[in-house]
Amino acid sequence: MKGLLVAALAALLSSGAVAAAEVRPGVVYDLGGKFDKSFNEGVYNGAAQFSADHGVEFREFEVQNDSQRVQALRNFARRGQDPILAVGFQYASALEKVAPDFPETRFAIIDAVVDQPNVQSILFREHEGSFVVGIIAAMASEGGSIGFVGGMDVPLIRRFACGYLLGARHANPDIRVFQNMTGTTGAAWNDPVRGAELAKSQFDRGAEVVFQAAGSTGLGVLQAAADAGRLGIGVDSNQNHLHPGNMLTSMLKRVDVAAYEVFDSALRGEWEPGVRALGLEENGIGWALDEHNEALITPEMKAAADEAVRMIVAGELEVHDYVTEGECPAK
Image (cartoon, rainbow, N blue to C red; front, side, top):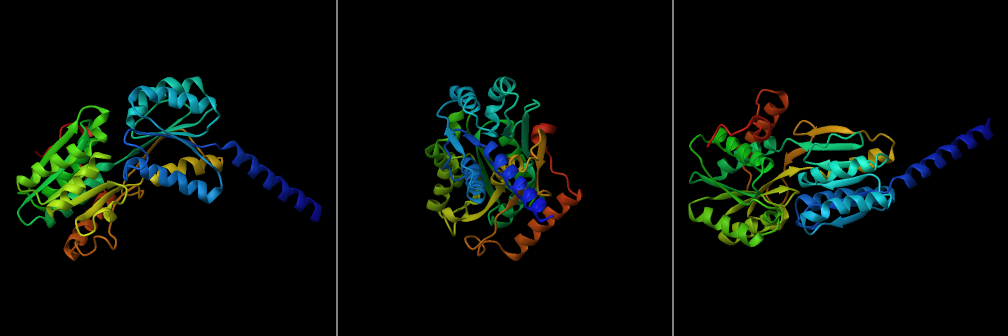
């Protein structure tokens, strides 16, 4: 009996070692670089945590332009990376081309749906979190004006903008919300100078709080807010630490958790293709309250934010989704 138990344990350890050896994660980042302190860096943090927890190294690549996307995915697949995580919706067409050529390789993509049998598509309900920080922004504004700076002008970023506007109007029907998008190409994610300029123009019109959803461009927005003595709202990662005292909060999009789970589920033999949608209910979306911004968040703001979260999760409040439902009902 003892011999059988030893043999069984040895088999389990052996199978675990094989499973770990078969998982060779790869991450291909979006424009803006892995240390953008936002979207890409959130993914990097999740992958790095997985690596630290399980002793499984991951390979990574930072594209410099759109033309590198297909080749980056193809090179990783040829080298045996598996699963391969594509960071951002702009990888959708590239993955449509590459995934069928490597049917045994598992791929995942954030912010897009790629309907292939070896692809997991991970979506987030950003409008829910944007609604909540819109409430907080409106309540923090004494003069009744706030702003939003987006990166690339695409439906995904319009989803952030619409949710933010609706949340602000939920708290204050008379609030003014200035909106600017940085550009229409991938370069819009990596232009902090332009981000700062757009933020300054909103401050000149009276905005007291600005929410950015703009990748590295957003770092310029937040810097401009700090320089002007106004308040910024970060995105994706918790950016409260960047300018303590001038960061009202951050809208959390837990791409770190998504990245970790892509690799961890593969390691456990539980990875599945298909679509995953993460919002407030799944803790894939949230807002940040910590030592860097707690002095700025009044009990009334927290109570209003918490109530909005409760209502959205309970289905008592439905936030308009620009991507699936079209034009924002508020202007």
